[in-house]
Length: 68
Image 1 (cartoon, rainbow, N blue to C red):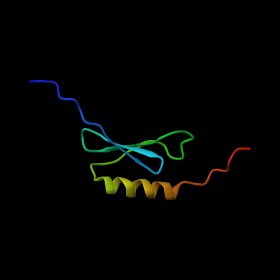
Image 2: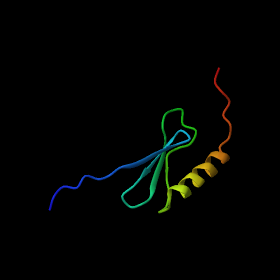
Image 3: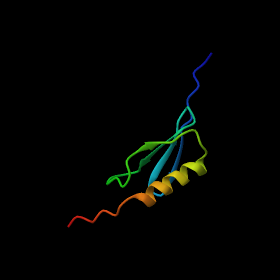
Image 4: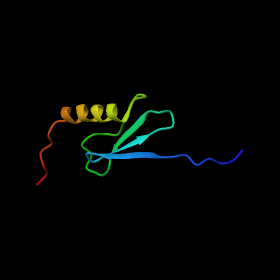
């Protein structure tokens, strides 16, 4: 028995980090502030499906007027 380091799988996509979790779900969070979309988790799915989910959520966001 030995220590096996966990492998972190991380992808950058359109200003977001897509982090694969040990249970094969994904954590999606913005790379930096201001956040256009709050961090969220997906179900057990492929990278392509995560990108589709993110695209759908981004298309539903309301444009926020820029501060002066």
